[in-house]
Image (cartoon, rainbow, N blue to C red; front, side, top):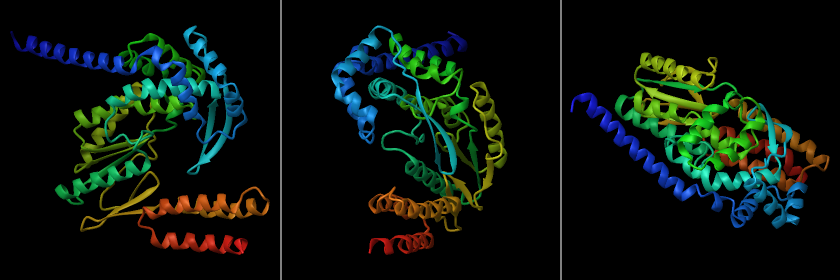
Length: 374
């Protein structure tokens, strides 16, 4: 057996192992009848109900819960589309205007059943650990902790003699193409009926893009650049790499190598329609301050990592609290709602090295609302 034959034999063995893993995962999580059983769909409704039980559409659906769940189940089995269109609204999050296309409660129940019982457990198995978005036990705090961990590990070996490449994807959800999603699902999910149901959740958004307001969009968007994550970790050999949805970072001692990595990443992104925002993508020396996920980072000479909240986030909160005064005086908000929002933001500030900022926000809150509590 020559070297080429040995290489082919190893490839076939690895391929067979991957197929066996996929088969076992589908046996555990890809049972169509279990996913769309009445019990599972009723449980899915109660998961969907959390935080939105006040909505009229949710209350109407629950009033005839078993009948509505049964009708959705029959639509699924008969191949009838469960899509009921979108509810459109806009919101401003972290200074950005976001256009939300929320799905009807009947479709959300079906989505929850598929996502919780099949898509999430199967797709999440191949994600890198340092992918911190929208998964149980992860989130913004997890992504920030991983960045601090990577910075500490780098400092132990190289000190501050290195660079960080910060990458931002431009209009990430809007530029996601559907065909790569369907191709990936075909490789990982064996039951064609589950793939067809998932396509029903994706196709209504248009020729491309995934809409905010759909749980399926979140899961698929996390998984979409997964092969790029693995390329960075395994081919480019960047240990200090992490991603939170459309924001990511790479840490390395060589600026030239990070420039090479950026060009390779851009090539991979172009293959699937992801656009890298050149204006926000930058390489920063670790002796300088940089910002990731609205948090400013500084590394001192002795290796201490200082995290401060960004100025724009503080400005937004101060403006919001002044608006709360008008809402309270107009009877649109209670002091309890205002206190809850304030304590939530205060807890966020408490995780940063922003003592003076915290005192300033406390003073503003007491000046605005303590007279109204008397």
